[in-house]
Image 1 (cartoon, rainbow, N blue to C red):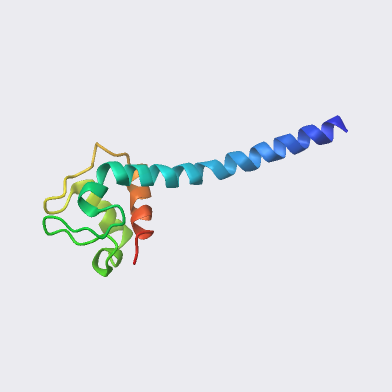
Image 2: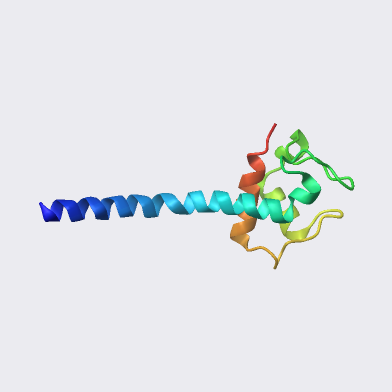
Length: 103
């Protein structure tokens, strides 16, 4: 009986451990977006400042992940480059987060 209880705790812990990283990444991307992007692009991606296109619009949403990654990494127009300021993983998560802003 005791072994069964320990097996259940171990199984629950494993499931929890596998579920938390994606949830943390999604939250982290939202936090990164708020801190680095929302001032110019708006909380919902609809703002366009200094000639930037809205992130939730068809022009940006139609870009490939590689193009979005490059824009964030290297900057584009007046947008600053985030290479060295954000990790590759954070940039990848931001690209995924930008996809959630689609109209």
